[in-house]
Image 1 (tube, helix red, strand yellow):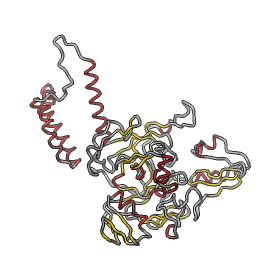
Image 2 (cartoon, one colour):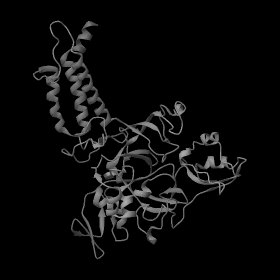
Image 3 (cartoon, helix red, strand yellow):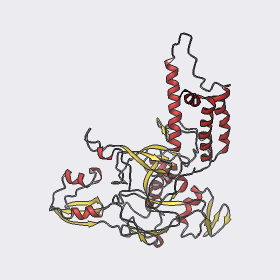
Image 4 (spheres, rainbow, N blue to C red):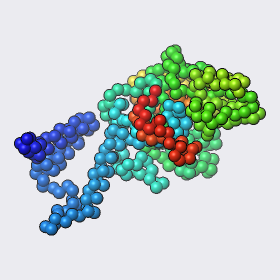
Length: 452
């Protein structure tokens, strides 16, 4: 037994085990310059020529310990370990809006897993540990070192109807005083100069440093999406029934609003509900089809009708709000009658005309970094006249499960593959901001694992 303990304590064994783990990590990263780190590993365990933990001091002859330096050592180790986990395995995230209710609830605290699709190699490694993009109102990263996008190996690709966490595509430009607003929407509605005058200034963030969003991937690269009367169709097939997906209904009652017990039963947030005494009832009651059928049987319900937007869309869903932000017969779309729309895929080529260009303009100029000009109906990409374009990466179409209370791909277009972050892995805590403590804690959601 003593020999076995001595073997595991042997410096060569420790070096071999650490070097093997480090080598596997380098292979996974696919960046072989990191192999030079094996020199450091060898010195730490074998040669010990460099004092890597330079902040540590040897114990004095009297055996007294330096508590301060021990704390420094523990904090440095914790920061390095936590940063490593955040970059490659899990990242914390809180659900700020109701766009995914009831699949994910406002106030859910998540761990986002990155192994399923593979973590992205850090593009801006000079970042303050455990921050995303802001700390104390300032950017928490430096652009001194910027590396191209590269995704490490994962277990599988994104599948249709996965719940996905991604970097908000329009989050590359942020209104400093109104960070939750979409800058590009303000520009379309008010003009760029008016937006800067009334809502500015702005700050620009690089790819990968945008805020995180979470939605359901309803269409994959190469798919054709069509929403008809609120029902999603992909390649002509209806989306499978998913319990969390809900639309709004007009619910006419006998004049009395529902009590709190009814609202809690169907998972309805008071914040997104309005009782109109003139109806009387609720003009936008968010439930799924099964719950709508159950509500219709209540004694105080006179009628319940699904809300379906037809063209032209109602305010605020004007053509300037819905992607591709064009008011024409080619895009006579609403949030409930949308498409058909083909989702771009890497290596695929599309024909370009001035009519179809609005669908692909942002992909060409922003996501794939080409110059684009239109001169007398002639399209020039990187200065060359062309009538087609070949995509460099895959794109996805995301929609929130709370279909009538979700700003998603219908409002800002495609999600590039390089913005995919991961998938919800665990709800570790959840609170309802509309209730006082301790009744605001959603005990049934703590340690929830599956999101279907």
